[in-house]
Image 1 (cartoon, rainbow, N blue to C red):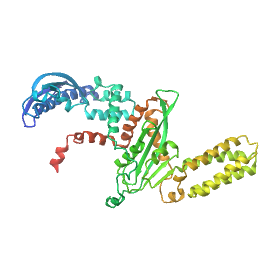
Image 2: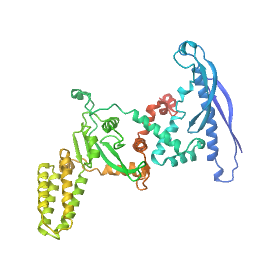
Image 3: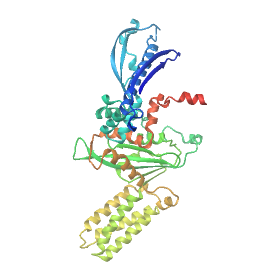
Image 4: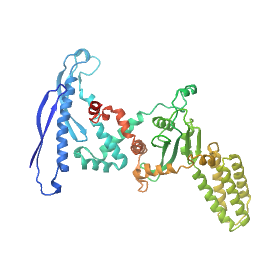
Length: 467
């Protein structure tokens, strides 16, 4: 069987540019593998069609932009040079003409222009950059390049280095889109204007936690990533991530992140963290919150460690060990009910009792050190502690477990925490921007904002006709 595939291009004015054969196939039907187009045939067909279609579009565009914007005269051609336009369906070779400008426009500028650089300044099709960014956010750069080469006719122009460059370029554009530095959501807003705001879509919760990956510059050290997840009662969850210390203005990133999710200045917002300095800093710099609280799980874990030491103390000094266990139960009860004053008193009393204790318990020194660290932790987060029991009974979150799952989803599966992959701070920070948007489904929206034509997908006219 002979199959000939013809391509016909019709101009905007209805003129037919002729019919051209772009593929001639010989099909032999002996098995299921012979039916339809093979992968190689489809690649060749797509590449041939893409070359002709792009050439026709570029020629039409150049014809419409060959006249001087000032004088209206047709520009004289000086020559052309070859450029490569990398698309999803092959690398298209194009001729980019250079035109002489009128002499009156050459006084303070170049003598020639290349209009095609305005149409394709990056030499990469937006959808190809989107797909590379999306796939490389989920799998290593080399794997993303291999996947593109497997299913699309892009073998000659794709490799791990190229994909990485495109991904980082997209991430840098996201960085440039961040809003200007703001101290809080309230900056520049008048509370009297809140009455004009629509009713917020319920409460919003954002949790922050940290993870570590191997530093490429100093391979014996790690550096810290801060990732988080924000959830509203209405709407989808969104991810956020940045490299601690590399991002100098984390409060701006958090504010911009929440605003893109639809957060309003009069909306109830709660931060949940592990209470560490790394994730407490961005929250404090960003003071629109009505409630901010360390995760109860982290408090309970520290009390559990203290209980284990106290149980060991019981075997050496029953009275002292029992007293420590009773003190820890009282502290946990006070913290659960938000009685911070009584909890602080109980912790201080327990610290003094342990300092004065004379016992042969071998881990007494570790017990004293641990209780002092717990005392410092509670003191540092005193302003953020809440009534966990009341919050739990009202059905609100008191745990950052959902954030710890986010750390594994964002960091472990792509940054290969277990394999100790090595990263530069810049590369990790920029990849975080694309990975978080890929995971929560907002990456496409960012590209459509930059390239509105991506929202078309060639069926807008059909939908309008149907309407």
